[in-house]
Length: 259
Image (cartoon, rainbow, N blue to C red; front, side, top):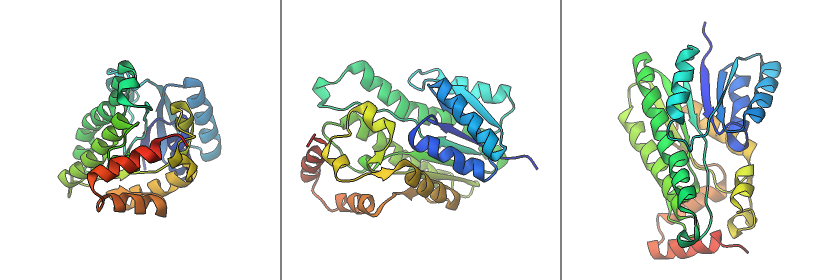
């Protein structure tokens, strides 16, 4: 019987890196995507040795509009069928919108929103033809509300949350499930690169990437539509529904500000 394959973007660190061994432990082959080729190669070697799975390394920068097509063509050239698509890659630009760099913000939109959508549109027809497939899109609790100092990032995650819920319904009864993972503050390289480790939200407490990955993976296998790891994050997302919008943005700016 042919093994299944999971394609994971943003696989070189953080939640993506922690998801990879969860698939491998269950005997699922991997196609790993990230910019850092050396880190991908190191991870791939470890996974092959420990779990005896096939691991394909696809070094690509999803900030480049051509990257999803390159990934798709690489998969086709190597006759790799994707059974699990994990859109985990993400980036962040912190600060008041007027103080941020235009190019960086546009790259953020490309990675967090456009590349995610593009990969789904490329791989979905084959899943539909087989009548099976699972998609995991990584959003954020920031997708539940607008956040000053993090405006475009949270807007892209709101898109991921909305888009995932909508296509989950579109794909009902097709054999394909769509799960949106919405972590809160998480201990990853992502936070340090974005320079947000000292904001109040992170000082209030973080979850380990491995813990978030386990919760997301379990939700994916169960076919859940939305998964929010951690009681604090669940309460935060729930409370936003009953809080006036103007107050939400005030609270958001307080949490996103440096302590």
